[in-house]
Image: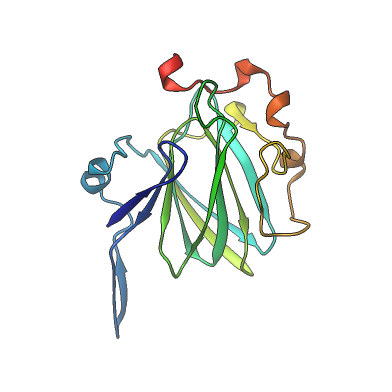
Length: 187
């Protein structure tokens, strides 16, 4: 397994060991001891699986009182996955990182608590898996507008399919500071 740091502090690309032969393949998708050694030391308490069709864009979501760290991967298909640092006081505040995750590269992305997260489906069908470090609390879900020009995410889809809820998300500059996470050194 290899781990690559991104330009956003704490956001990691994980490339698990992959074994393939004439019978098929084997891939260890999570091992607490190994992941702890990479710095991902939070316990995961919930696994989620979503299915999306081509052009669907989900996000950008975050939680405030019950922030979730997420370990995301694609079981089937391909997505463009994005993390945005929205932690007040962070040196990377308002910056984003995105990458392609698919069933062929087997990569995972770790997004720590305090980041907004979203993805868009690039294949006809996508099965997207994510481990979460906190349970989902519907009343603690917030969102950042997917196309906030000040953030400037370069989504690889035109005219994405977006839920009404996600279309009502705010620009980062319009989100009240009390509704944003705080960078750990400023708590």
